[in-house]
Length: 526
Ligand code: GDP
Image (cartoon, rainbow, N blue to C red; front, side, top):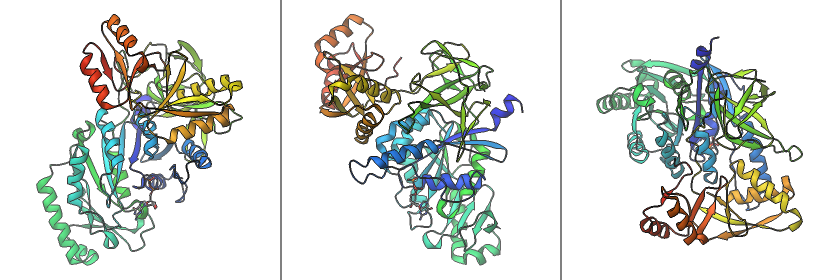
């Protein structure tokens, strides 16, 4: 198969959802339909159920699951589909944001009873920032949910995107009868036994008398009315608008009982984007380019503490990646080759000889990678769009055991390279402040420092609520600001100065009073 054929075969996407909306269930059904797994229950939810504050085993279990389900690949209709998993827990939102930099589109799952939830909105904001194409799956139609027209309105308003239904539910709750395909103009009626796959579906035309017989006259007429209304209100589905991130096609269904999943998968295969271009600090990189390039968007430590190696997840952006070939690690300006890069399959890891744009491969790493690192065939470029966001919770690391300060230092360094949290240093005294978006990360860090590095620490809360990277055209003015505010200045891992603000009000005042200084809420501001 030629390089271009390989490229055109790939579809790389993430399923995102507020916890409990049905992401895991839908993922599993897609894998089941795609033939990648044989039985339901094979995909484990990588959900952190936080029962007690020190439920470390749960965190460890979660980490084990999350590496196993980080990337799931299956072939369907001659396409190679890569699903990238995202943690739903809001304390791990940064992980999800980074994963979204590595996909070309997303499927957003909404619970029809709850509608748009807090995490849904946040995740969607990130997609909108990058114009990532989004398909929406409204799930749990077997429950009494909101009226589908109201849901569509809510989606448009809260998610700030135009929507276009592709399938439409016939009744709902315990009377849910299936979905009507608005483009194919036929009803997919599901048999009473809702647990099997395709063979239970009977296809019926809208004007057929069979429809009345199957779903009842009332539901049939309601459907005809709804369809007329939809066609009057919504313009035809336009793929270009979807690919530009301006229009989200909407599907209704019930992942747990397979309703509407096949329709979703087929349309996904028809319309979703092939691997798209990606921006670097120098130029746009097109996937068709012959020379290989890619970036690391996730680093996962080995859960076995006896093996200190880590797995770096590399998204291939252009060209063909080949096992054993030398590539340039741009940040370190170092040639590297990988003798056993691997692909993630539903239940195992396989060494790969080559990989193509859209693919995600795992590279064994002994500490050379940081999130955002770029590999090329020699060109000096760095992929952008993988920023650190301003954390919200800040705590100082206090060493409990002075004999182990080296271990602590190394552990903190490596865990923050992995992107578990952000590290800031305050002078004088080289004090280390960890910044996160959630409390849970502190538990993870404390636990892992002890378990993997033998270093015991505690945290002292710091009163900051925002960290802003600061720059200025006039270097003297910047130095002056840093001197004046020295109590509130820290340095990030790359030695960039950061202003720590205790409240939004203080931050606003400082922005107002220092017009020569630029304040940035993400680390990417060039
Ligand atoms: P996630 O947190 O988004 O991964 O959600 P899960 O897939 O783990 O689902 C959360 C809960 O909702 C589980 O108990 C599922 O069995 C249930 N669930 C998922 N899909 C459906 C559905 O279509 N209908 C109903 N009634 N429950 C569902």
